[in-house]
Image (cartoon, rainbow, N blue to C red; front, top):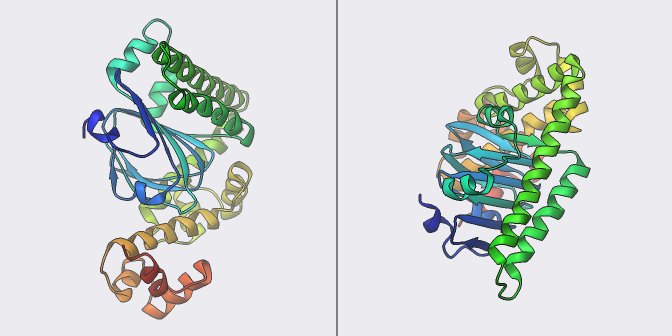
Length: 289
């Protein structure tokens, strides 16, 4: 999909002709089955969660994170009802012109984004990035300005500098301790594994075994880095996958139970209701479009 076609007629999506668009989304329906243009895309997830496919990999994108997609095919399956996300779209021509003299990001940042597009933020870092993006958005909403394009580029440059600063700070922290490096890598491997196996594997023991660590060690690392337990990550991912199938397919409850490795429909319904507080049938009724 082309840049101009994608940004056309989208609510709260602002653009300039030279190849930049900023889109703020608070309605999960806008992010349902959404094919993204294959250009440079940055997503700042303020709140909520997005289920996406990036370069043919299923990923769960969490709140207070930045996702930097470098011209890779990407597709959003769905988002949580409480989603709040800001997208920045830049064409190659616009970006090359903006950063040609002094790119803010080191080359290792670019290489890392091809392997791991998500950058997790602390709450303080999230607040700062949100302030920069709010300024960027505000420029589009003002009255006619002779220097709008130049001001927008300056505000975007500030966003990039903040991202580069966060990346360098995090790398310094990692490089100061090989143990910290190992823990963060383990966490990212765990997060990446869940969507690939969650349909059949809900046991933390499975993921710990695949990562060659004990269950206790994995639980401790996941909790220390994300503030949530390993089980919560698995459970949330599983429920997200189930919700997607309930909303977007006509599969029977028995078929869904089979797809997700439950012994029978009753076990599936009991598990779902315990975690979502309504039955899967009721959820489907409420979400029929």
